[in-house]
Length: 188
Image (cartoon, rainbow, N blue to C red; front, side, top):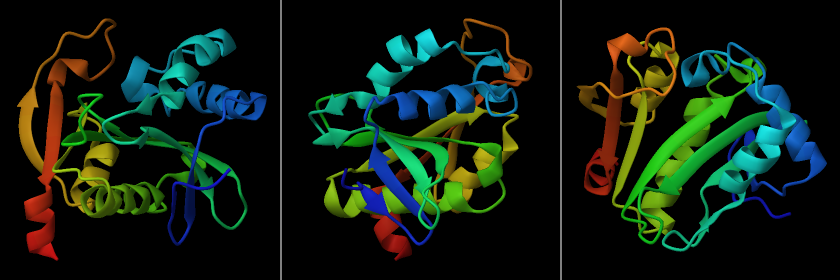
C-alpha cells in the first residue's frame, strides 16, 4: 500500500482493516496511559475495534479526497507507532480539518507527534485545499497541547463539554487550538 505521507522518521499509510491493524489498534487502545485523556484508561475490546474504530479509520472523506486517519509507522523499522487524524469537520468540504494523534508510549517524547502533525498541516495547506486546522484536547493534557503549539497552532478557546463518562481532569474543561492557512503562510 502506498504511503499517504512520508517524513524523516515516519510513514503515514492508510489503514487496511487487516488483522494486523486490529492487533495494533487493540494494543494501542488498551494501554491505560495512552487512553487516559480519551476514556480514562478503560479497556477496549477487539469487537469495539472491529465494529467502531476501524470503520471510522477506513472512511473516505469526499471533501478531502482521502481518508482522514493514517497508521503511523517508524520509517526505519516499520514498527507501528499509532495513528494521526487529519479529517474534515464537514465530510464534504476540506475547508476546516481536525488534527489529532494517538501514539504508543514508545513514541512519546521523541518529537514524532510534532513531526507528523507539522507534515499533515503542510500537506493540508499546500496540497489539499485546507483553509483552517483545528485540534482539541482536555485542558490538563499538557503533552498534547505542547504538540499542538509546536505544530504552529494557537490557543483559540477554553470550554466545557458534556462527557458521556467522567474522566479524571475533565472537570477542568477542554481547549481548542487553531491555525489558518493565511497564518501559516505568513510564518513562512
